[in-house]
Length: 364
Ligand SMILES: [Fe+2]
Image (cartoon, rainbow, N blue to C red; front, top):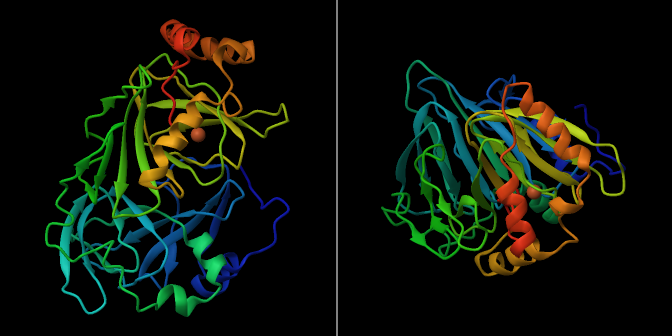
């Protein structure tokens, strides 16, 4: 879907991308397959890449970057947070605080990690024959538009020792379990296969939430069983969803309008719901569909309150019993094309009984 910034001026961040980075920006509501997007040379990074600015917002962004076989990107550090999902290939990242010892950790397709704030880092391709491609979600738009000073953002000498202490086992994939299926960790080896857990508060909901590298951004995985869909909900801008497997579609629409945009998704589709737009996920495949959802600005102490309010507030969701009947009818027709049928009765019943209903992700 072709996209333009609606009614917003070009920001400091946009000028930086255009004039300094000189890398194109993809805009709109989604990218069909981030594994197939054409990438262009990116001088500062020392690889190929592209910026992705979905949902008409400038709080967070995405970019794809590719490392040539046997190659490495340039070292960098910055005052914005960065979460990285390895899309294909294998390699390693060197990381160090200014003046500190360099540590290296290895990753592969499906690995998820965060760059601790303002740490130097350098990514290496571990293969001599295959390129590495990764997806990064950052809050660069917010940070750059706040400071409006590249020297401050990219060459600040402050060391956030509270975020990264230089410990040799910082990226060892050991984490600290919290309630509500939250894992505080700095490295997830493979998001495609990590087991999910039942949410004790929202029955039928299987998910996992990660807090990485002491950051304010977070990530969760959520899975929609075959024959099921989520109720429509809305929230602030900044969520990015990458579908890891399965197939289905989203409906999304601006609050106060009837025009529903349908986005068909598959493994590799990236979407981002615009600020306060309703959106709803439908699984049309025969297998569970797993999404990885990145969120802007959630901290540990805020999760519970945010989560509860999100689930209980009818202002933010459309309960199944009040949704447009055409929504479920269209879903039934879509499944029937493949000889499948909806498996929603239990979900509807749970919502009627205690409001828990569908597997709802707080900002996915
Ligand atoms: Fe959402």
